[in-house]
Length: 362
Image 1 (cartoon, rainbow, N blue to C red):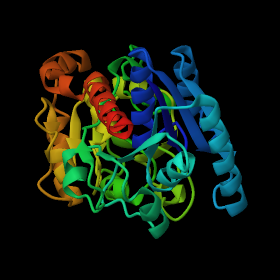
Image 2: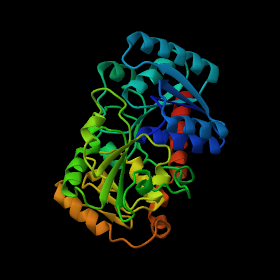
Image 3: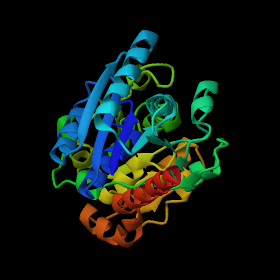
Image 4: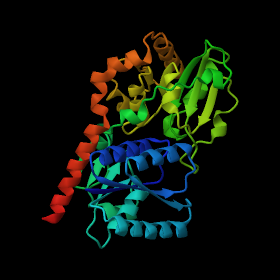
């Protein structure tokens, strides 16, 4: 099967991390895979991921669209059509709102089939996207996203996200204490994901105020991609116990050297960063949201009773008492996290693709 994925960029972020794992696994299964990236991106992690995919035989094409420019949008869509004609995919799998439109334009007046993957709900489609994609098959990335769907499409399925453990886990260790010249007894708490308001990093500001001058230090690994959907990094400056790392390509190594993973999110799809933390064996504190509750049946995971900073701090202090090593925690978690392997997810995607192709051929 020839599969084409289209999204904005690779690099840090839930959609990016998922497509990276999915494309890798689909290629490993013997399928021909192309990943088309529409937007300009100089993220080091993105280039690293492209290199890994290329080694697996995945073709990665950059359209280098300048965001916000309508002429660039049209040019990139025309270039996308050219790439489709060269590759001739059986399936075009689009990821997120604008990219569903790309996929539909690519399929227009030809025999290629499109599947839209919805990563967060409610994913509000414009009239144009609804016009072109209202009858397309849709994959929802988690039970929570499926339950919160607003699309009226008839052919929908829930396939929970997964990750490729071999792409996530590393034996390398990055010690942020040394990198930031902190005392050796400092406790390192890491949050991962771009600076979207839904990640609720402002909660870390309140936590940093509560522990000001103490041994607990919070680190955010994630970038500001620009635009109104993202927070300004300057919001997080000026706090002694809060540090912004920007986009990092060594998140697994950072987690190996950290004491705790923290997600304060007010909303998630099926959170890739949390799944990665699970496979890295790091203790986790997760916000009490539906999407976290549904996947919290894993050893060494704690959850505060509410979103108050004091509740988070109390839970963090409980979790920091953990004595087991990350490797020991990973071994404890294995029976619980096997279902989040990309192998299961990729097979389910292929099965759904085949259903779409078979229906189109009848």
